[in-house]
Amino acid sequence: MNIIHDIKNWWWSIDKWILFSTILLLLIGLMLTLSGSSKIEYKYNYPNGYLFNKQILFVFISLLVILTSSMLSIKNLIFFSISTFFMFLILSFVPLFQQEIKGASRWIKFLSFSIQPSEFLKPTFIIMSALLLSRYKKKEDYSFLFNFSLFLLFGLVLFLQPDFGMFVLFFLTWFSQLILVGLSFKLMSLIILCGSLIFIISFFIHDHVRFRILNYFNSDVGDNYQINKAIESFANGGFFGTGLGGGFFSKKLPDVHSDFIFALAGEELGFVFLCFIIFLYIMLFYRVVISMVYEKNLFVFLSASSLILILILQCMINISSAANLVPTKGMTLPFLSYGGSSLLSCSLIIGFLLALTKKN
Image (cartoon, rainbow, N blue to C red; front, side, top):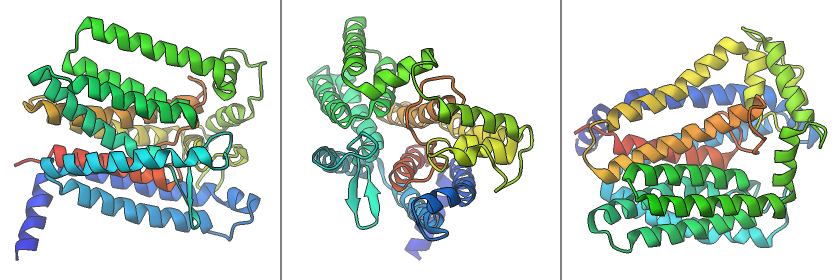
């Protein structure tokens, strides 16, 4: 009876708009993976339905992650985040000593799966950062210095892998936290300077960063095959799309099932359905914002605001890259793109948001 009572309390306390919007996005992602994975399976000699079956497993685990993490109390959420952060921070150094994949060392091979440890640092670092910043706001001790040191350590991992897109995402989210907490202008200026220096160093050290930026501003620098095919996919889809499985241009994209899945959706489902997908992301953002408007707990406010911000920023970067509005980043679209690490990481973000926005 206690279990039933706890489930009822959980059900009536969570934000169902956040939960159902996420489930809809997961189902759309499964639908697009089924359509876009056939060419990839043929290219790598995978059995028919191999990627789709793996994605179903990822979705099932993701739902379990959302449900279990949404039941955490604030105290348990903090403890879980701290322990998980340091565990995956250590694991993030392991890929640096392994073989590179597409010019980067980000994944750990486990059986037939690849794990990207840095993905799991997204939600856990935000919780730790919010905890340290809220402590600094109250006591003005060394909490900010410790927070800054953790960010530099994690930034070093992303710099060495290299994963410049992830670093930009983290820096923007962390900087937004600092704005929300109201740090002094002197500290903010110092952090802007550090971020600018890292950007300049990355531009000159990492060839792929320099290539993507130069290629964006000057199309003659390199190959624009993926961007051209993505734009042709949107144009061919029109308002209502060619129908699921009817994509032509998008199926020629090497990463159509992951980084460019928005282009696949644009061609097969059309502009109207793309607006519906964007509406679901906006709904997630809106529900968190209205929950935080009158929030008096600084830790909860910083955590929830930053978690939804990093999710929405990732969506904006992926969609903008596919539409050639920003340089390509190699970043997945939350809940739609194929990939276990990204899916589980985003699900953990949703679970944390449900836990933080629960009603008494």
